[in-house]
Picture 1: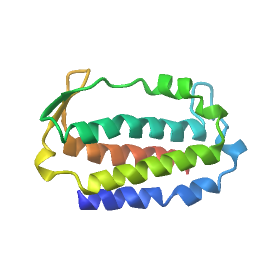
Picture 2 (picture 1 turned 180 degrees about the horizontal axis):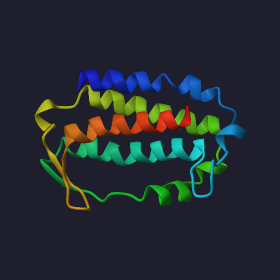
Picture 3 (picture 1 turned 90 degrees about the vertical axis):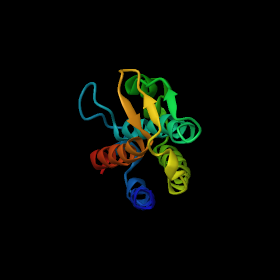
Length: 144
């Protein structure tokens, strides 16, 4: 997990580039029904919150049943569009500093512990952690 933690931390260094984006630009929705940069980064905060539960709880139980989440509804309800861009960046960065530290120290014996997803898939902790970083990179690429 050390290499994943390093990749994680390299993504967090992009916060400086995010701060170069003006609030007005971060607020633009590219098309009806598409998220603004604020909403995309907000979605990554929501992803962090949901995955935080998985990263910790899957080290405490070999099998876990947790709900998924509706990304669109989480973004809508939290109104990232109405928040200052700088606050969204800071929250995203600090939450993920915590997750990177957690990933660095994950118990290797728990990496095969399973989350039964609401749609019937079985995903192990190692896959969830790696996929989280891929997901973050994808959305950061959209923003930058």
